[in-house]
Image 1 (tube, rainbow, N blue to C red):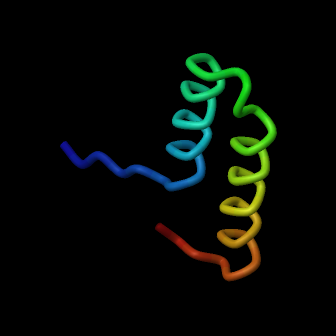
Image 2: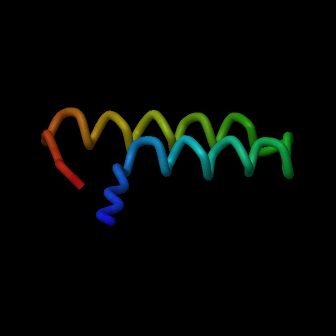
Length: 47
């Protein structure tokens, strides 16, 4: 069985969990998520 993980859904999952645990950090979590996804998209990283 071969399991392949993509970075974008993993980052989304971690961001969602952090928002549930610490809602006051919502702005920073969303900003960090957008930066990470943007870098992945711009440089076309296949991680």
